[in-house]
Length: 378
Image (tube, rainbow, N blue to C red; front, top):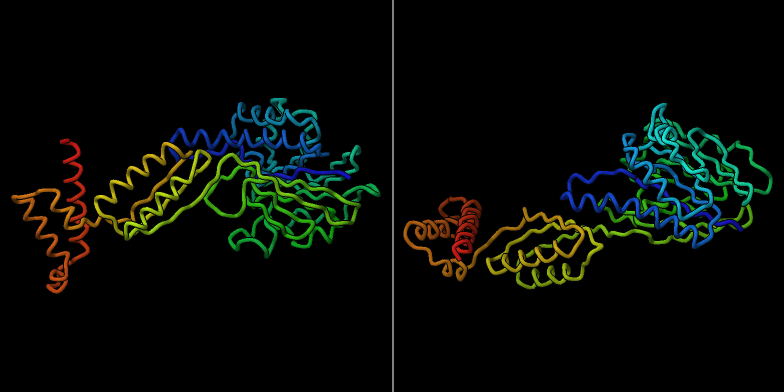
């Protein structure tokens, strides 16, 4: 019985402008190595075809070098690759696909479905009904024609489409490029391979999103996988096995720091992470000067160890203790200013109608400057 490797949303050429240049370059490069791992997996599993359900490229303006690199990355699997365009790389009159064809970069074992058609793979009796996007957004279901499509008797009917299954995904994507939730049943499909949703998702026994093979956003929807699809007799549901292929792990971490044990827990979490991790860290709460020094040391060590660490400390306020203030040894007019800010920021200031929060923020800022000055002098 035939086996497919279902993948989608490679987004080759994606840019990561919100990251530091070295991180952005590594994340972009990981998209090529993900394809190389898919090719190696397809060979190791002896699959009959690799099905790529759209968004091979991230944009129409991908460079010639990037196009050639992508098709070179397929080399480890000599069997058939069946690809359709998605919304990012729609088969426009002039597109990344027409560019690739002019470059003669597309290998003979790659079947491009740039128009709706059935790709027939006689060696494995696979009929792949392909619904490519020929514009970025459509409001009709491009898989409608699957229902009446003729395929050879006794062959497996495989649908390939890119878009949003209506009524089952997030509301904000439940509009353009719609796909009927019962398409597999209506079109008598043995399997419907979908792209567009970047996480692995089972719609029903015959309908799956593979997700992107390399995560590209901080969203916990099970990305970083491909699907090995083992087909049984035509008309029998397939066996679908997700396989992890990602190089990097994208995670969002949030922590509130109010007491020393909160900081201990955060540092332990950071120390448990390693080179494959791409982390978005959000901190809030209060921290004293000693805690701030420990935090900065932990963040510095993590930045050197992880692939990427983005830290947002905007919600974390410096709250110096009495011991912190005494250790600064400030006197003269600075000492008077510190004492005044501490008074306004306390209960007496609140009772007098002053703004304690603003005074506390000013004290934290001044304290931080004094600490920095002391460190510079040292």
